[in-house]
Length: 161
Image (spheres, rainbow, N blue to C red):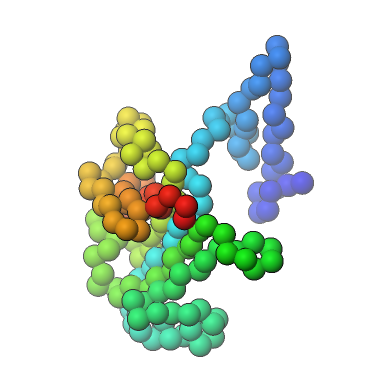
């Protein structure tokens, strides 16, 4: 079955000499199995009029926007029972410095299994990793700047979340 929007088919795992070969991504490139990013932890964006936009999303899309300007979407299974995980959603004022040094109007937060190992690997690969790592009751946070100048947040949630 083609991947949505790409018209590409995944390349199946092949064996040669009884040893498994590396899987290929949708573009046919070889890749190792990696657990660097495990999901989306949050989507954050800026607005010219954050309170009005928050109210619009609450009224028209039913998002339960809280006083802090966002919402937390708890993950559930097919029956609606909670499972470990939450995705945060936030609208910040345009003047927010939360995404600095990026000038982008958005930031994606990716869930990771081992922030320290990932930050080390990214540095070794020559990526622009910000030196600061924050730890709190919400987990560990680190940041990398992608080649387009966007700040990317990496989040290792506390165990069991």
